[in-house]
Length: 178
Length: 347
Image (cartoon, rainbow over all chains, first blue to last red; front, side, top):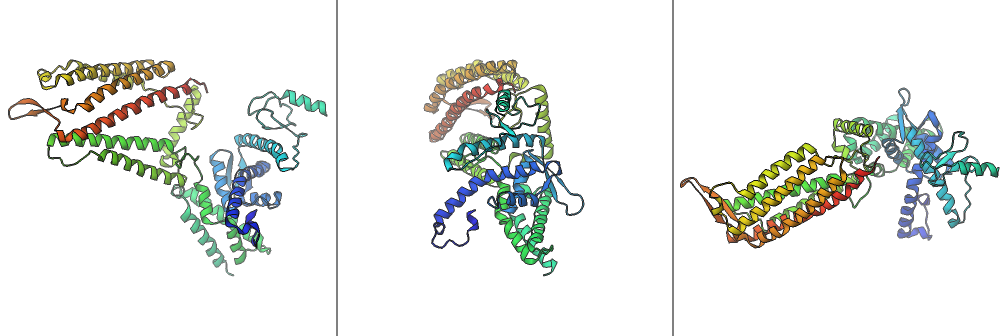
């Protein structure tokens, strides 16, 4: 965000110490979040898969160009996710020979857990920054033990697949609230 | 602007990226080609969109390249692989420890050997009073610097392994999973067996035989060549070595299933290591009782000489190192007994 400001004038950003500190802080915050957002975009692409350039375009659009990563650094991140078995890739054999990325089965489970944790964390810390965060409780259940994000539309849903917690009680409470 | 110039701009950028990439990545030609292809494709696609005319222009290529970030920042991201742990990544740490132990052991052995040669040859003019410590320090610094550099470059232990070795490890993991053997949650690899039973039993028996030889000294006339005080020390050492061999035989018989038994034997080894220390201190303080037994071919007799007084300090340094190793091995055995707890967990 801070990198977008080109003219500092006499503003705080003119101070090198301030600028360095803020830049470093921003990149620390962005590191994990951008990885999670990249995973979210790949997860939403389902079986069609998605290539690197498309991922960055969606990232820019969906985050109103707030979350910007240096484009070249996307590919090392994708490679690491691939090495960890979270995503897989397939290169086009004809045409532009772009590489398409897909979630693996294990990757989907990890993504559900991390996104659940991140959602609950964002909700929990929202009051510290005086912002409102509302989770899609109508569609998801967040495991009370580990924060794993579970889709309520799954009729077979009884246990959290990450920690094994029985969530029937939560499901019942939600039904009664309706 | 010609397509040739645009190609040149992209090529130049990719060349810079390639130069900055870590060596382990450059070694994998296919991977390297894929990475550069992907970056190239990205730049052209971005430039095409930025130009707004459906065709990339030189300006749009330049902007697209600027959006990519610097070659350094791209390469840096590839290097960010290991888990940081005091400058050396967690993944490389076991390899670092292994190298450190191996090199320091070689240095100690070489120094002991050169010291013995110095005494036997008499004219050996190589002072090892401080050399051993300087060499160890030097080895420590060099190995540490190498591993810090490797960590910064993003090397992982698998980068030093062949495809064959990696496949073998995968197979071992599958076998461990099938047999329900414990797998390290940290490394994801099966735990190594605590002992190799046959190796322990054979090694233990050899140790016992060696201990009995020291205890009985079945060489006629040898007792006359040895100082009585040192003779007693040798016999006590013999007892210790027999006990040590016995413990190894028991460890071999217990195998990898009786974890508590292995822990008890390790504790016994700690007790034994502690028992060695007073003996070593006596030797440290009395170098004059140590005999160097030699053979004179001309007169066909065995004779004994003492360590020359000018070598006493070097001798003491070596014994001090041996005491330090004994203490470290005792501490290590306590640590090892503790780590065996993880073998009790069913995975």
